[in-house]
Length: 109
Image (cartoon, rainbow, N blue to C red; front, top):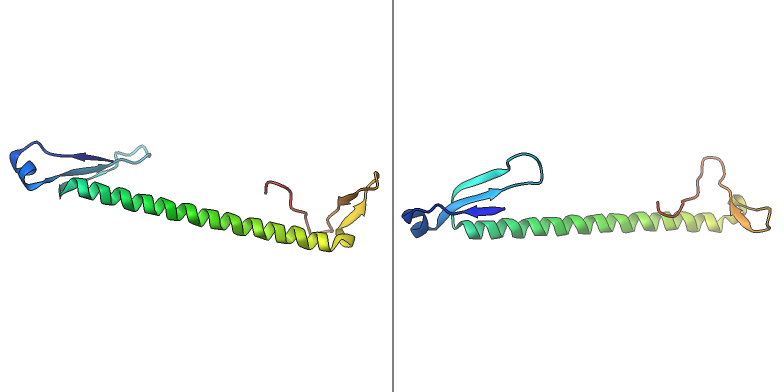
């Protein structure tokens, strides 16, 4: 985002200019023309954009924690029902075996 100040006497005297917003997309972005106090407008836009990004990041982190808690809950439930889902493997160690229609969560999901 940039601020363009016209180089005329009146633009400088009255403190007005253009605020240009360019996005990462291929388009040209957009311009607020002849804005009073363009530096303050630019600061306010950046402040709000930063707050929006922080809020979005917080929502994503909360959703991820909720999903992880759910997966751990399902895993814990399956471990408590061990006799239904776990058989002894050829080495004598327990290996997970889901019943029909159920699956055991895998790491990284």
